[in-house]
Image (tube, rainbow, N blue to C red; front, side, top):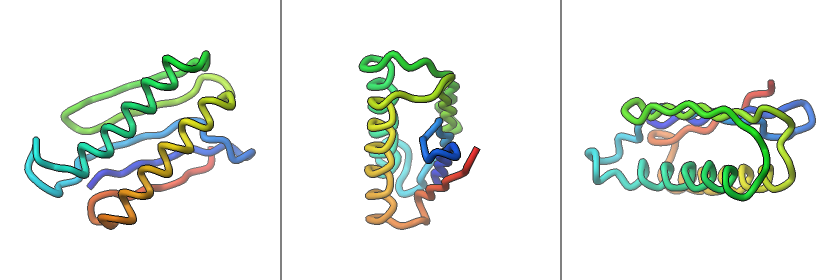
Length: 109
C-alpha cells in the first residue's frame, strides 16, 4: 500500500508531504496505481521546481517508495495550487481503487 501524509500548517497551507510504499495492485512494471501516483507526484515536484521560486528539501528512495518533500518557507500561491491539484488527483485514485492500495493522511504541523 502507498501511504501519503500531507502536512498542513495552522493556516491550512500544505507545507509538504511524505510518501512511502508501493500499491501492490500488480507486479512491478504493471502496477497502474503505482504508476499513476508516481506520475502525479513527480509532475508536481517538477512543476514546483520549474514554475515557482519556492525553496524546498527533497529526499527520495525509489525502491522503498519514499519521497519526503518540505518547503523551507511558507509556500507561495503557485506551489499551493500545484499541491492542491496533486491532492485532488491522489484522492481520485483512492476513490476509484480504494484504501487497500492508497491511503492519504493529513497531519497538522
